[in-house]
Length: 175
Length: 130
Image (cartoon, rainbow over all chains, first blue to last red):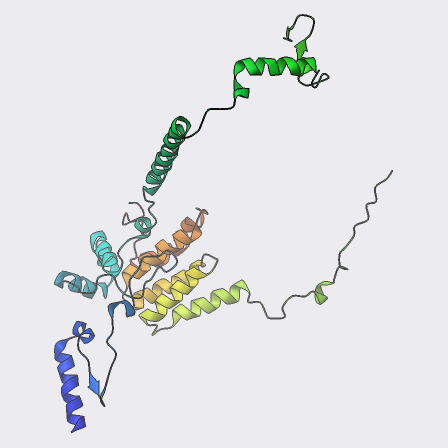
């Protein structure tokens, strides 16, 4: 009884076809066989370090492609360049030149950088106008003049520094 | 005051025979090449073995010798896989990296095989440019 039931299930599977295995379950001995999800099957990917991927790129071949595959079994010298390229494209998605091609992403990156620097600049300007209070009175030019005069009177750094640059006779900065 | 020119070792120099290297036997380049030529020369090599071999070989820090590639291309012929043959040529060119003179040398060495098997280079097919 169990044997005949198994036979029916496998026959049904062969009718249903390969793709549908993922949607049907073969019941044997009361337990099911796990459904095979797409992501669990070998995948195609173009990588420099993996030149020959696990599967062909094109899985279902058209009649033309199938006849080309037959022709491939003979001498390759008889194949035209277009046919060779077609055979390559059946097995692979992108050539090495195509997969190694750079993107134009860097332009977006630089643009983004400038944009955010600009935004920051606007924020800083706004802050200066609306957020920060007045600067201390010690920055006023009147105060600064008095400060410089006091420093000169004190002979700050008279040898090589500040006061050394002041001409005390002519009361001006040395040229 | 003369400076002392005496060299100071942190540890005494060991003779070659007593150095602390591993005692494993190192495979010579010829042995490596021979091993890979033999791998691809298997008469009934299957598609999986070709892919595995090629992907492993490309994983190494070297560009395969022409004789290894010759063996691999002949394996492609036995498997009726022209696309893989072209892909192998692209892969070794990419593997050479900045050393632009390696690939022309390989093509020069492989030319007899390429003409014999009727394999076009990616350049012949215009696939090396976008």
